[in-house]
Image 1: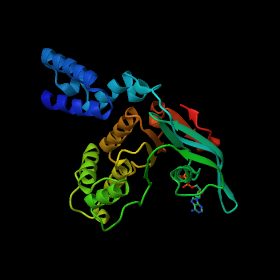
Image 2: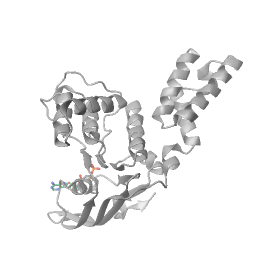
Image 3: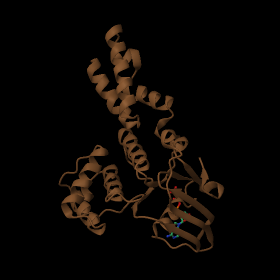
Image 4: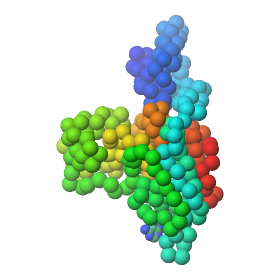
Length: 274
Ligand SMILES: Nc1ncnc2c1ncn2[C@@H]1O[C@H](COP(=O)(O)OP(=O)(O)OP(=O)(O)O)[C@@H](O)[C@H]1O
């Protein structure tokens, strides 16, 4: 691989891993100097750009640790939530508090009630007991569904944007910008013609439209390829750094050291700090 191409790929991967522009510029300049001086091929000197960027991100503790501690007012407070279906108790006294500028992860085994809890927080499912307070506007991304088969992406942006008080043009432009952050350029297809992963990108863009204060995301990355998965977490860190409160339901434990609060529903769940 020619080293200019490798360096351009490294720049892109560092951004995806949430490494800030100053540090990324420094890392790329150092790598370029080494490659020039040594004449080594970049793959032999540093390995693939994605792996080197991951190592750099890990060595600085990742974006979460950088911003941790900068929190604002409470955006979501769920207290002592209980919920059952028939005779089965799904949630029993579950509590979670998320502040502006925090990311919370909801984890737990299949069927432990993660989606149910998030839907209760979003006001889509009623709880049997307990209270939910939301302080701010809310964007919700479901695990599946959520899009209208016969509408194009821009029509979704206009429709959901209208519900959030956005003029049509502004909503379509904002949707396009958010889509490109997920490496997607919406075309003229109807939602039913999109792949599963692309439909989830549409759902995620709709959740973020109008820049809500609180983002409730139910495993939105299902079907994402690895690059888009990293782009997703990059978006999450950006929302957090802009003072949004983000709640992500996840099965994947490899990001947990980078979130501020973990609610483990396998353990009964009280929203403990990570
Ligand atoms: N509308 C419903 N009617 C009856 N039972 C339901 C309903 N919604 C969820 N359940 C049951 O509640 C339990 C919790 O479901 P939920 O989808 O919240 O779990 P989850 O932790 O999100 O699971 P997964 O990891 O598989 O997505 C499951 O046993 C499910 O079958």
